[in-house]
Every structure is written in C-alpha cells, then in structure tokens.
Length: 580
Image 1 (cartoon, rainbow, N blue to C red):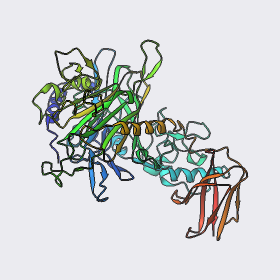
Image 2: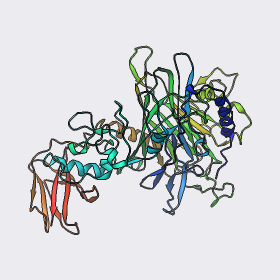
Image 3: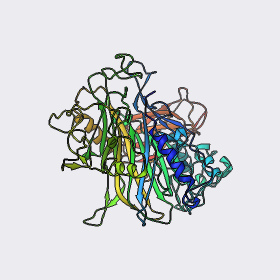
Image 4: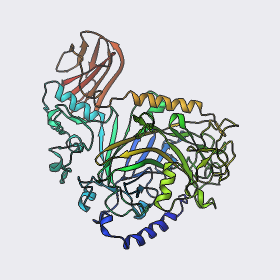
C-alpha cells in the first residue's frame, strides 16, 4: 500500500472544530452516512472500481483502476491509484462554496453523500441510505425490450428487473420493486428514451434506459448537502450530481479498453454560483508510484501519465517498489475531456465548451518540503488548484517545476509539451524528481443559476508498451483523437438504440426448427444479433454483406427470442423469433 500521507486528517479535525461553533442552518445535519457501495466496471482486461459518491478508482487502500498483465491475464497491475470530483464557485456574497474528494471519505471525512436532493436542496438519512447503490444496465437488456415492443407495439414478456428498477423520472415500478420512492422533482434522473414524450419513464409503454449505445453502463447519484464538508472544509453548494460510467466493445483497441464518464451537475440552491469550476483530481500510479511523470496536451484536452525511466520499478524486476509494476513493458495512460463545462465567451457572449481549462498538480508532502506545492488544507487552496494556480495563489510559470515567483511566463497548464521534445517543457525534459504527484484537471469558469445544469464528460484510455524514457506520444495522441471522433458520433438520445426506418424484412421457416432465413427486400445485411427474453446475447453475426442470412438451430435454446438486424446503411430493425 502506498503512503498517501495524512494531512487530510488535520484539515478534517480543524473543520470539525469550526463546525462546532457554527450555526446549524449553514450545514446539512441529518446523520447521513458516507457511501459504502462499490462496483467494478470491467471491460476487455480493464477493471475500474467505482466507490460511490464523488470517489473513483480505489477501495480505500489500493489502486483499483487496473489492467490485466500481458504475461499473466490473472494478474492486475495498477494504472491509477484514486480519483475524485472537485466542484467550487462563489455565491452572490462572494462566499466560496466547494466540495472535493481525495482520500478522506474512507476515513469518514466526506464532502459528498449518496442520493438526490429535494427541490429545496435538502435530503434525509433514509434517502442517503436508500441511494447508496448503483444501477447497472447492458445494451442487450435494452435491445431485448426494443425488439419486444417494436414487433407489435406491446411489451409481451415480463419486464426484466434491471429495466423495471431503472431510476428514470416517474417510473411506476420503482418503489414497488426497491421499497423506496423516486424523488418527486422535475429532474430527469437516470436518462431514458421517452417513446411517447410524456416525460415519464414507463417501460410498459416502450421506454428504455438511454446509455449512449454503450455495451454496459453504471449509473449513480450523489450530493454535497447532506452534512458538513470534513474533507475540504468548504461550505456546501447544494449540488446534485448524476454520474454514469460506460464502455464499448470495439475493434479499435483504444476504444475497446476505454472507460467513459458523464457527470451532470444540478444547482439545487436558491443562489447562483459564479466563477465555478468542476475538476477531476487524480492520483496517478502507473504500476509503481515512485517513478511516475505527468503531462498534458491542452489543444487536445488531454492529461497523461508516463514513466520516468525505461524500467517501471516493481517488486518483480527492481526491488525499489513494494507494488507490482510493468518492468520494461510500460503503457501510457490518458484522461481526455470529451465535453467540458459550458461557459460563456466574453467577447461574443455565446456558449463555449471550456474543455480542459487548466492542468495543475501538487506533490505528496512526504516527498517534498515545499508547502506551496503540496496538499491543500482548506477550501480556498482546493479552489486555487481547481481554477489553475498553485496552493498559495501564485500562477503556474513555464519551466522547471512550474513554481517560480520571479517569472512572468505564466500559464494554466503544467508540462504541456511532448516528452520527446528536448526543448519543450515536460517533466522528462526538465529531469525532475518523481514526487508522487497528484493532478487536477479543471474545466471552467461557468455560472450555475438555481436549477440550472452543466455537464462534464471524460474518457480514460491507454496505449501499451510505449518506448521510454521521454516517450514520443504522437501515436498516443492519435488514439485520443480516435476516441473523440467516436464520442462525437454517438447519439445524444437513444436513436441508435431505438427506432428504425428499415422495412422489408422477411423471416422464412418460422418458427425455427432446423434453420430460418432472415432477408431484406432491398440492400445488404451487415449485422444480426439474437437475444434471449432476459437480454442475454445468444448469437451474433457480423460483416454479413449479403441480402439474406441462414440461422442454424445449432444449440439455440427452445423458446421465444428476439432478433436485431442492421443493414449496410446503418438502419436497424428487430422482431421475435420462436425456436422449437
């Protein structure tokens, strides 16, 4: 286990002292407990732990964003130790409101709690406990529901539990299945395709969860208003945050092992928040934590982690590190902002995507003696890192460590040049020490009016076996471009998942005893999938490029199933197939 120091305990203790002398009206006090639920998002050798509320990627002790070793698929090697969501802004009285997660929540020091807020920005202990959970959804579950409805406009089969319990607004099955109600607010909650546009999620009417066409997705909800902020000592914002993590199976390796994250922020207070930023805090442990370097590419809204030298310290190849590393086969890991917060262009007053507005970092206090570049201890110091400066408010300066009070060459991005450029500013070109740095990816500024919404989306990806030291990251940047293009082409609603203008589908030899034939009156088939009633994928045919497909029985179980087909133009159709 790495040494991530205990400075946060001191700030939490001081925060409690301040709270004891503070009027109770300034803080939520309802005995809410912090998040305890955890779940793993697993895709193609990548395992990403989701600990709930505003945490990411660790279990309280160890790295849980890992990749399977190429030599031993059963051995997982860490890529990122931990992550957390930071959010801050100023109310009309110029009072800073801020919530931030680092390591404290597993020690009982929370800035976020599970569950939604009511329309007054409040919550209850029961609400926190009820929503200390995740909702997991697969594309196959959605496809089966679509096929069931679209053949005759009626759901004929029992609605699967995961569909019935999806927390879409107004879901009539939710309380009966889970034993507690959905909040009675005007907010959408978990995203869904609303087939009849009545604003209510009702799977019996053909509504289905909306997961951006992903193969799997996990959704959860949290807030910052259930108690005092003992992690950052910040005043509460009364923010409700909806989160969804999701993945895709793809023939393109960068997409196939990427994990995607959506965050939707809703201001449930009666006051606006100005000069607001949301950020992703990252403790990047690429194998061994003793030899990590970091950098960014501002033009590509990208943060990345690479190794200091040609061998990643590991208990297996070098005795210097107590955790498993990559030895000589070292990857590079990136976090790419795909949709930044929406701000306002000061020149045109038009909306603008803030993207990656800053990349700051600080060092583990165990390894550095300079307090100006180490852990934040109070809310204002968290906000300074979040908005693009050092802990003491000094600007980042180009060159060296980025902390030079005599320099006027200021920037908001630490280490923005390709490490292979000897004349650029990177940790490798500067030959800096690896001090177990933690990074903050900021996106802002923006204004959150009461009841208004802002969004933040990013993806984590990696490229294997990149030559070190001072690696040329050109191919790695191209991988990020591919992910961005893929994301930009995703549907903003469920149009990929629902509906089709494809007609002229013929199904011969139905019911299927030995074989059946699916055919199109016009065009060529591209893909056909068969699903069981509970959404399990039974069989998949790809790259067909023919006007018909012969489906052989060959072990398919007897009973009703659904087919879903796509032509070469990308149009979809679905229906039922009885197997006898």
